[in-house]
Each structure stands twice: as C-alpha cells, then as structure tokens.
Image (cartoon, helix red, strand yellow):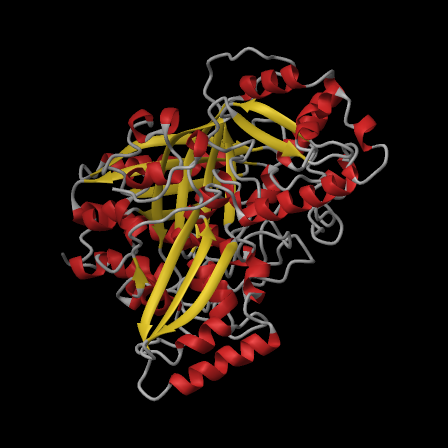
Length: 181
Length: 439
C-alpha cells in the first residue's frame, strides 16, 4: 500500500523522496568530512542539481560516525534517470561531483567506471520510505521556480502606481484576488 | 575505434537510397533444424556494412530474431538467459509501461503481434516492386518446401522520393553519425555518437562495453531493434487542425508547431515563419541546427513539439540527451488519404518504425516513457507528445508565443499501435554460429 500523499485533484505526485545509506569504511570518516568541507567552501554541492533541474532538496549526513546517509526530493522516478545521473555525477567529466567523492569512502562502492555496478549499488542501498508528506505535492522543481518568478513579477506589478487600474480588466480577475496581501 | 563493418548487417547502419518499396515478413519456426536451414539460405542475401549493396541492382535484406525465435532455433538456455530482460519479455509484456494502452493495447494488436509466434523478422527493400519480388519468389519457394517454418505476416511498405509520411510531412531527416562507421550523420553540429550506443562489442557513451549476450560470437556486432506498426489517424489529424485554426495558413502553422518542421522538412528553428521547400529538400541544410543558443524558450520550435522531444539536441532538459539517442527507420504503408479529405475512409495507413540501439531500456523505452508520454523532462508536466503521444482527447500542448503563449487542448491520439516486438539483429558471424548449432 502506498504511503505517498495523494495530490489534490488526482494529480499523480511526481515528486519522490529517496534515501541511500551505507557504512563508512572504518578509518575513513576524516576523509569524508574533508570532502564535505571542500564542497561547502567551494559551494559545489548542488551544482549537479542546477543542471538536472529536478532536485528540490538534497542532503548528506552521518549517523553515529558510522553511516553515510543521502536523502533527496526528486521529480519523477529515479530509475529511468540513473544512467544520466551516472554519466553526469559519477564518471569523470565537467560535472563529476561530490556524490562520487563521498561514496568512495563507504563499503562496497564499485568505483566510477561501471554503470551496471553503480545501478546495483544504488538499488542495494536505497531505503524504502515509511511515511511521506509534501506541502505542495505534484509540483516539480521547475514549476516551483517558475511560480517564484511569476510571483516576483506580480509583486513588482503591484508596486506600480497604476496597478489597481490595470488589474481591473475582467481577464485579470484571479490575479486581482491575490493582490490584497 | 574501427567497426568491423564486414560483420555488421547492412540494414543496421545504412540508410536506403530513395525511393524504395519494401516488405516486412515474420516467420514462425516450428522445427529448429528447419529454422536454421532457412537462415543458412538467407545468409548470402544479407549485405554487410562494408560494401553496401549497389542500390540499383538488388534488394537489401536484413534478418532479425525475437527471444522466442532464438528459443525456437535451439539457442542453448544459458545463452538465452544472458539476453536483457526487456528483450526476453517482448514488447507486449511491457506495453502498459510503454504507454500502449486503450486502443493501442496488445489485446487489440494485429495478429501475430503480441503472441509468442513471432520468431524471425525479415525486411527486404528494393528500388521497385519487380526487384522486390525477385527476392521473395525464391524465398517463397524455400518456405514451401520447409514445413517447419511458416510465413505468418507480411506488410508491404514504401518510402517515396519526397520522404512524405502519411501525415504529409517529410520524415526521417535526422539520424546520428556513428563514430567509426564512416557514415556521417546529417547534422554537422552534432558530434558522432559512440558506436557502442548502436552496436554490441564497442564502447558506449559511458566509455564502457555494453552488456552483451553470451557467447561472445553471438553478441558481437549485433544490435537490438524495436519494431512497431503504427496506424496513423490522418483524418482525425486534419479535423483537429481544422477545428483549432482560423483558415488554412493557420492550420499549416499549427501542424508545423506540433511536428517541429514544415511539411517540406524545413525545421521551424531555421524557418520560423513559413515553409521553405528548398531548405526542406536540402540534406546539407535541413538538419544543420541546434536549439540552445537560438531558441532556448521554444518560441520558434516548441520544446514539446514532436521533433524536439525525439531529439532535444542541446536543449536544456532533465538528463543527458546523448544517452538516449536512437537510430530509426520509418517506412509508410497504405495509400495516402487524398488531399482535402477530412473523413476517415476506413483504410489502414501508417508507418512501420524500426528503432536500432544497443540498449532497449535506456534508448527506446526511455524515450517512450520520458519523452513521448511525459513532459517532465522539459518542465511541461502533464503534456505528452502532441503527434504520437497516447493522448485521450484531453491532451494539452503549449506553444510558446509572444506576448501570450498558445495552448492547444483536447488533443486525441493521432497514432495507434497495431503491433510491435523486440528483435535482435545478429552480426553475420553470429548468424553463421546460429546456423551451425546442433541442438
């Protein structure tokens, strides 16, 4: 039985959460922390998300100094895009990123030259979610950004001295309803 | 890396010169020895890619096998088990996932599609009907004397000199260049794709050798085909355009926005306002374009238009477009619906599509699920391909336009799947191995 919240109006929620967990190789915690610090300083964690355009949030954390956990909200199913993710994030190249640098310090990481092994690693270490909720289900990361751009534009319209007169047109009725606050 | 062109079946790589007529035939093998004997006799007629057959002289013949066919021919179990899951299951078993639902569902497919009886697929293409029959006459004779193999389906097809498909649009204008094949693609701005995306035994776009069926002699230089018979609802297409446009010029504009090219083949990106037949007919120019610099928002060619979905080039999409590139061949069947006719005449007309690639899941199936029946990858959640998507009368298509975008609504399906199957097209050495099996 699915524990995913159903979006209003029967929209199939396109946003999924996924979580990966793996045991850190004993003695490698220090190196892992260095990778995280480097990414934080350079601001590169998230570079891949900017390119892919489907990740809402992503985070790494460590439990008990023993386990590395990665969790993210992602539009669509991760399965079809694993190859693309592998190509961009795992194989050396312009977008080779933190993801690969971090997982190499965990047990059983297959390295960055075998797509099938990477896919198997992903599936083996994926954690099935128990309960999930979204405040805006069924909305993609791109739509969120678009909505924010529209909001920004709308707010600057409202700042115009003639805004009230402009919004009087019947076609703009629904926008006018949002103008008061 | 040089390809072993002499081992690769001709049909896997080379485009046929136009015009041509052809036929696709499906065989059922009831006796494995008889099946292998038919293949043995077929072998000499299969051109190889190192010396593409003189197009004026003869028919080009290609042969491919389904998973059930390999089984019927006596391929050992451990070899069968080494084939990818999608190929083993066959297209019908994966129909729901691929969007073949409703009228396109396998229960409505034309026999023998969807059944385990489809074993060997043969395509023969020739400059004219006489030369096509010159291939089939002796083949029919062979089958007559071999009760263990039966021809169970044939579809005649053609590609006219102007490349027009049943919708009246020039088709098949874009194919990738394959590294090491000596064959240029038709877009000078697109770097060649790694051979391993289309042929087994060569490095792919990850720089890895794609998984190959065992034994190596069977897998090497082979490739996978996804074959589909697609019925085109040309009358419904014309009715939709008529109902959504104010006049013939607007109808033509809407049609071009849906397809991404004008009927002549001129791409919207290079001819945004009106058709340019000279451009459409010029193979050196009609595919020489990219999207990102010139048309990032789709104001010329909508992101969701058919050609931009099927081949996003350098558009900003989710994922890496180069990982989902296919080679495809489309041939038309049935007569054209006469110009100006909006009523369906009940005649079956459409396209037999063949997709060629080394990874059915990552290429053919991915494109269907993520680029045809989904708009997530271009940020148009809820929109499907307006031409070939499995729309149900409620489909929507956004056409970027200044100042206000245009939204087409109520899109029905214009293409219905009448049948489909996955095939493996072996190299010539592999076929000789198959023929020599003693099971």
